Image 1 (spheres, rainbow, N blue to C red):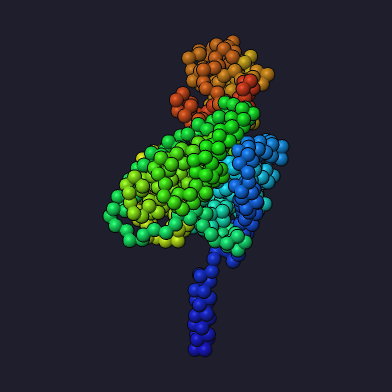
Image 2 (cartoon, helix red, strand yellow):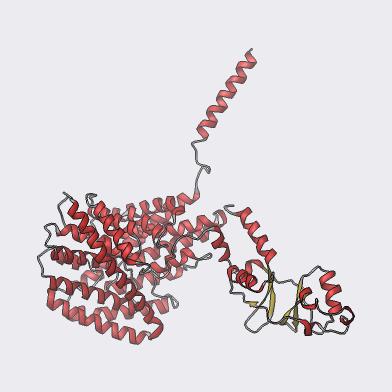
Length: 570
């Protein structure tokens, strides 16, 4: 009896231990979570230093300086940024937030950490000397680069999908820090890679990194909002919902047009050399400084545009002046982009949205124009970046109230419908690819066979049949002379040849040279398409000089698929 009781007690004890163990994480110390927090904290420090130097030192000194310096400063900044990227960055481009989206979609992304100082310094020069771009671009790049470098260091202990999560976590921390909006950072990092989807698997690392980046940043520089839209009436009515829909329509059209113009401005780099772009860009920006200073009594074309929102908030202005401000801000941003400036487009889009909201609100003569500015920001930002949830969350966190979330959602939703497929970022995809699409995007080399036996042109058909087709069970054999691919020869090619002619017929005379030839740069999708079109189960792979490299066969593609099935998530 005592033995039975002891056994029962042991079972109860084991059950209790198992119950408690079920609440523990699968790994006692989840490394990726700790790495996400560390990345967020480091990015918070980087962004705090970057913003302090750019805004409080360079830009503040510029805005308080003489007009002659404000006039020439943008050209000086663009030139300095170019020199920094070319020499310190070893030829790095000016792209920042776009680089995060591009890297997110690459199987083996490249974000060299050695280019990070050059990108940050180029952003300081561009924005600190008056370029009309936002600080979030270099901040996102900093976060993505830190996350990518961390995953390189710890890749031995991380799964492939976890390494991409750290990239996203870094980008989230960059946005959370620079805007002091942790939730916006998370949503932007998940939403930016796609137009109609989100990178949901990176949610938890992005949450931790965003929180850490935000806390470190605000501990250093405080929690003042980036854009102060002023107070407004929180008693919403059906009229406000209609106003949100109207603003969504106007801002959607405006955001669509602005996104198209941004893409054209980015294309100037391929059409004109840097000297022409900087000279023309500097002259246009100088002219805008003089014009805006004359019209508004301050150079509102300089910098990301926060001063423009303060000008709108602090007084009553005519529709003509507000419309002129919108045109000048759009032109300043496009010019900075076209001249090769380094920075982001998030804040310029938000500022343009605030101006559009002011225009619509004043046209309708509404009493609560502050609400319309808020809705305009949400709608224009959502349309330009194809990120409606990010836009609404940014507004909610920046203003500290949720009373207008519903009209902001309506404005963002309508703007999405009107904006179509346009976006200011160049690398957004429509949606996440499924398993089949991802595998078809793999390079041809993942299924390439390079140790294939070949046959020379001067071999006889009899040798082909007995040595290759029967002896080695090859279905088709590549015909190669001195390393140069000639064609394919197999049962189909010799089926019409009489048996007594096998010893006297050369393989080169029977080879099929009309089959497509693959290149190493092809994807498996390209290979399968050509196989299906020409009803063949293998393709020869050559370089641009027709030098034979190997073959890719349908059974190797199927075998690769089985391997990926077994190792997915391992």
